[in-house]
Length: 449
Image (cartoon, rainbow, N blue to C red; front, top):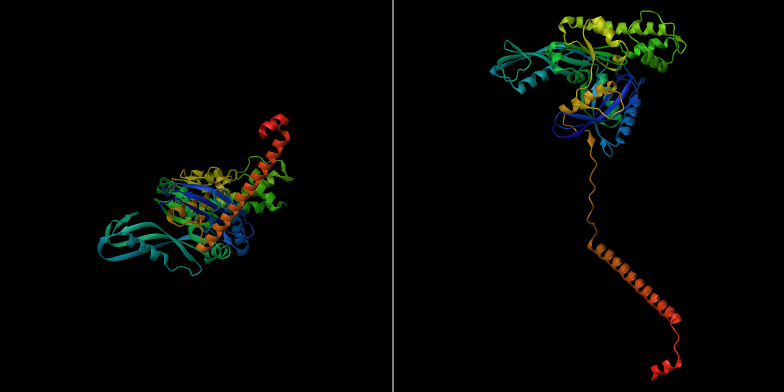
C-alpha cells in the first residue's frame, strides 16, 4: 500500500454514474487525473440500480472514454472500488463482548474477533450487513476508543452496524462485474468515506453532522467523541423540488434548469411579479421554498432521533451533494437548526486541478477513490506490456538462406555498379575523341617515326 499506483472508483447514484481515476503516491497524496460521468435518471431509483443492462452499457461507455484519456492510455481499467448508497442504508447499534481466559493484553487479533462477531450479528432477514463501525470500547470498567495494548479479561464494544437491502450490492455486482466485465476491488459506504475525509478530527470529536443531499435521497451521519453515532438515509432530495416544478407545465429538463439558475430555498419578503419562461416567479418560489423546508425539517429531526440535542453538536453541520448548492439551502438549514452550517470540500491531500467537472459533483467518488487507495493495495489498471525486440528466432538453416540472399543481392549490386562505371568510361572516351584537337600530317609522321 506504500507503492505509487493508479486506482479507479465509481459511484452510481440516482442522478448520474461517475467514475474517477487517480494516482496515489503511497504517502497519503492522491491526484485525480481523469473523471467521466453520464446521467442515469431512469435506470437508478433512490440509489438502487433498476435497469441492469442500461447501467452496464453506461459503465462501459464511461470506462471507454476514460481509457482514451491521454493520462491513462494505453492502460486498461480492470478493477473498480465501488461506493454504496441507497434508500435502505442505515445504522443499527449493537454491543459485542468477549470474555478472555485470563487478564491479558488486548491485541489486534482480539479486536478483529470482535468485529467479526459484529458482522455476523443476526438482524432482519431482509437486510444485509455491509460494515461495522466501532463506537466505544470497554476493557474491564474502563471506556476507551483505542483498546489495543490495554490489560483486561473482559472487553466489549458498541458497534454501529451498517445495513442495507441485499439488492443494492447484488445489482451493482451484476451490472459492473458480470455484465460490464470489470472486477470489483471493494465496496465502501459513500457517506462514511466522505465522513473520514471531509470532516476534521476536531469536528468529529466535538460532535457534528454530515449531510449528503443527493437527487432522491439525503444521508445523515452524526458523529460524537470522534465516532459515528447515528446514520440514516432519507427518501428526499433535490429531484423532489424539480418534480414539484414540473406541475407548472414544465419538462423535467427545463424545471431542473430553472431550479438551479433561479431557485432559492429562502422565501422572499415580497412576492415577485416577474415571469420566467411565462411562469410567475412567485409560483416557482412557493414550490421550492415549501419542499426545501420539508427536507430541512427532516434533516434537523434526525438529531432528536439520535437521542442528542443540537447543543451536543458544537462542530455544526457540514453539507455535501449537488442539492446542498441550491441558493439559500445552507442559510435555511442554519436557521432551522440554530447551528453553524458549511459546505464540505476535499482536503489538500486530494488534488483535482486541471479537471473540468465541478468539485461538488465528484466529491463523493473522490472520497471512495481515496479510501480504496489507502485501505487496499489493489491495482485497478493494467500496465501495457513492454515489447521486447526478438533476437531472430530463426533456425541456422533459415539464417544461412537469408545470408545467401543478402550476399546475392550485394553481388548483383556490385555487378550493376561496375557495369554502369564501364558505360560511363566508354561514353567519356567517345566524348573526348569528338572534342579533341586535330593532328596534322607532320606530327603524325613524327609519331610514326
